[in-house]
Amino acid sequence: MSSPDTPLRLMLIADPGVATRRIQAITERFTTEVRQVLTKDVEVEVETRSVRIDTDGALDIVAIGELDAEHLDADAVLVLTEVPRYEEGQALVAEIFSDKRTAIISFPTLGVWDTKRRIREIFMNCLLKLLPDEHGPVEKKYSQRWARWRSTEPGDQHRLFAHTVTGDPRTILGMTVANEPMRTAPKLSGALAAASAVGAFGIFYYSIWQMADALSTVRLLSIGVAVILSMVAWLIFTNRLWDKPINKHVGRVVMLYNGSTILTLLVAVTMLYLALVVAIFFGALVVIDPDFLADLIGSDVSLLNYLDIAWLSAAMGVVAGAIGSTFDSSMDIRRVTHGQREFQRRYTEDDPR
Image (tube, rainbow, N blue to C red):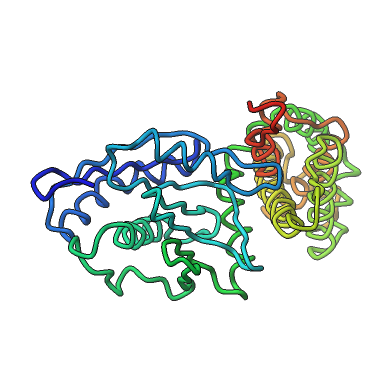
């Protein structure tokens, strides 16, 4: 521990990806806040690395000890991991190991909204619990209304649990954010190419125009939803993205993995579908003459008619794209979902890698 005259040295460690970007975004403000609260100079260092997990999917206690050994000159080590954690049947937001001067915060349990503020507040709360009392009291403003601290029997380990009702939905949404569905859609460029090729036929075939005009809005929306769900199911099936629990202990966490996988792909495929609708819509405006379309369908033409054609054509394209769709590389498959990434963290006694 640093003396009163030496700066307080903090180590912030984050998983690669969105966790690291969140840490980098809050570091400056967090450093300023620590200085204000503790009235002491502070040095903060950020490192990107993946903390290992064991074969049960739990954070490896040996790896946590290694963090402590690697940063002996640090007064506290704060780790932000994308591993969803469960203990005692509840989502575990944070865990403090006082003897190792380390706190582990699970990013997915923070949900979707205002995650930067939540990370900063929970970091501050954990830091004040790790440091001696003379550094400053734990202030109520850093407590979270949706989570509660519990202490273990020895008293040197503290756990922050999410509310039993909102914990699971918040964690699934947080895992989806960590999966970065906005970056998943471009990895389906092969499927998008196939969908575009087939969808473009809708611009040139009269029967598609007539069918789009005859179908009700509800039926068209139902068709769109059906093809999106079909493509999601196909991607999960063909790429083996559905995880199965290796034992009952990790069954609930695997359920969260699968839930976030479905939600991630739903967002990605919906974006692909809407992008295709927009592209076909503008293509139809250029190619299809309004007067000719009006003569064909026997009624006045508006932009909604072009949108109907684009929507139905895109649905046809997505169905065709789903049949031959896959991710553009094996690396994309491994990085797209929590379950695949956590598999990379695991190690066995025979293969410590």
